[in-house]
Length: 343
Image 1 (cartoon, rainbow, N blue to C red):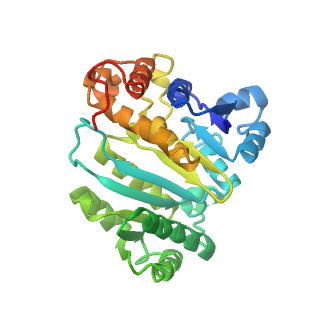
Image 2 (cartoon, rainbow, N blue to C red):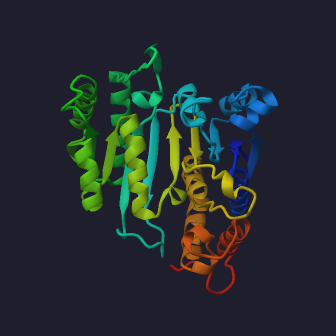
Image 3 (cartoon, helix red, strand yellow):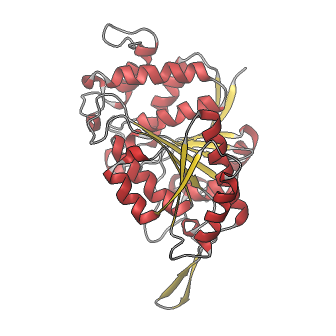
């Protein structure tokens, strides 16, 4: 039986990386039925809507989406498509594992962090208005419901997956009511998980501590804006946003996406690296219960990363987007000598 997936290729390099990832997914032998829709500026040109109602209906039907990068205008224009989709489908948990790939030079080898970010409120929601000309007010909303829910998600994941420590990241020394509420909720949930070490770090100190020694952390849970900043910071430990996955999870639906930009300057040139979306698709496969297929791609991806010539130029190789996908597929199929995954 085929998995029905809503596919949002995105814009810029989105179409290229999405095509590459779809080819790799289908090469696993898992059956998919793709429902493909535009979103963002391209959708507006065609449908006069940034998120067409047909796209919304598709996600309501499939409950699973795979999304390429979509550009968001800075300082004007339409609201972030990512934020709108997260709010619409109550995708309250943003889940970002941070792990190294072979032969990607970084300051920190063997990083293994999990960032859990509340995804529906706080300043990142973009609730703002102009009070009078020259004065703008942005609202930071923190609720007990959302704070408790994301803490429960983090601790339940930690228990199920053998993680030993969770830090709640906050600024409750200054925002005593809003971040104070977030901490009280996290502390309450932590009491039900005595086997997991619970600690708290102020967000600015956490950024410094991460840069000095990321190995002191295991899982971090935080509100929306802090999560946006810290997840990008942690991506730098393993090579940047072009290499890290992201999942937006709710009770009914889930959307898996690349979180890097749409890079319109290299669009259509067969230069883009599909690794971030591919690793996000592995999270999707696990979500669908296709664990063997996810493992097959993961092993093949690591095998390809051990051969620099097979990588895209941003990763120091010579391959284009499509050739990189060809190499992953070859590695999954036993491939030429040197591509065979090492055990």
